[in-house]
Image (cartoon, rainbow, N blue to C red; front, side, top):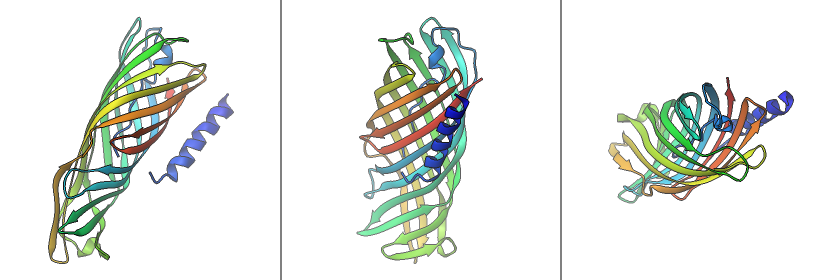
Length: 260
């Protein structure tokens, strides 16, 4: 079993390091397997979240890409009978982030450097973890990245390096998300499906070639999306999970967790 788990973790890390695919992933309780018992365990997980193509509501804006890599710590808040609650905090970085906007017919692309990103949230679970039972999960979270500096800015076909930019305000990204999921145990698998509300706000401002390109603070164009995923419980302590999101965004998340 340890070799199997090690192989699964290795696959996740290999896929994550080569991913090129924003909105935040939806978290199911890592301790879901033990929902029939009082939960007093702490959990840690490693997560790679690849975001591609999220439309914004101003300047024909688009988040073309943003890759989040983080370590997440989960602490139980409450567990009794069929009810469970967990709080979590994640810290890591966002890389390969690209914002795109149009000003007076001119396409402008902001290529952003790596920056620290963090998230915090809470999830609630109601249901009995056994065959043929539906488990209900509500996940609420906030994710933020700020002080994102510019690697370069492309205006039309001309590229400006960071040293050629002026009046540059660090780009920002923040998001609130609420999701509702339905899960069902099938052997060691836990497939889930649900809906989410996700509101993203981004900002970027630079002067390139004597012109200021200011996105101000613009929000996501669509806020409702669909979540599909599946978790695999590998032994008593490990869990691996894959998730995709669409509707308001295109996103893929891979994670591996361990319960102490």
